[in-house]
Length: 315
Image (cartoon, rainbow, N blue to C red; front, side):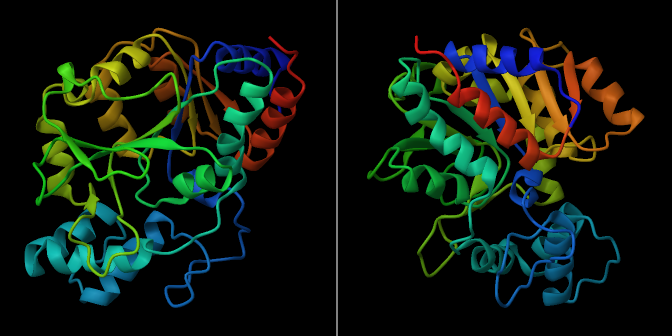
């Protein structure tokens, strides 16, 4: 890992000020997984990556397409058999207690560590993952959180967000710029921008997944995704540093998100992307956004960041 001390100083300073937003991509779920291990659909030994999930769906439904692209395979199933069977398979995969990774545990441990030192302890975390591993990591750490999740399909209104308070039923955020019921300064919030599985239910009726090509087209068609997100979160976006974990240029869903929220402008605050072995295209992409790319494995990076947080002087 070749990351200068100045980077960790900047990141810990952002945490101290309550100005660091972590963006979690699919790579966060794979960061501790040995290269020799692959996902097993029967034992559900670990979370699947995009290719494994695409191949599983293709085989389950006998898709007449060779592409291992998750959005394309999911689109095929949704068109030929309807979204219900697709959601049913996804629910069966994600309705499981997968083990949190070191990054999940790090983020869940930060509120207590920062609180103990007298710093703002609540976080805003954005994720494109459907599973509830991060939420369970916070629960295991004894931390209550709010979850705000995107609605991709009925029964709720498509294109809106649901707010799930600790121990309460989901509430549809119908007028985002007037919604004042988030407790960003009191407890952490997880913004699930691609939907979520609803655990421990027999059906996928309440699940939501941005996963088909039509879902992404619908995302692109919305002129300003920021207008669908509660004002308090958008305000936090405008005055925070960003730390992208588990994303690469090939995660085109990230590009959709960035374009919908920020347009073509560069990020206003210094921001960073942690990526192992980035190629020149990755570097150019992040540079255009004003994001510094740093070469490191997520597990190693998370361990180094944890040490820096633990050695912070009290406020």
